[in-house]
Length: 79
Image (cartoon, rainbow, N blue to C red):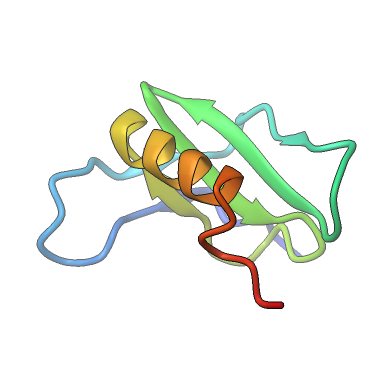
């Protein structure tokens, strides 16, 4: 299967279309799941490493910081 090479944010967002063809995807060595991130053109792309051809979420640095801080505080815990 061909890997998705571009990602565009939802309508109404001021983010560019990013070419993720040569993105350097990094996986965490901790936690459950296989979330991967890549730093591309000043943005942070995040995808499911078990489905790399699927969509990627695109974050600005401020959005990424808010997401990481929320995760550290347990904001997204399901239990």
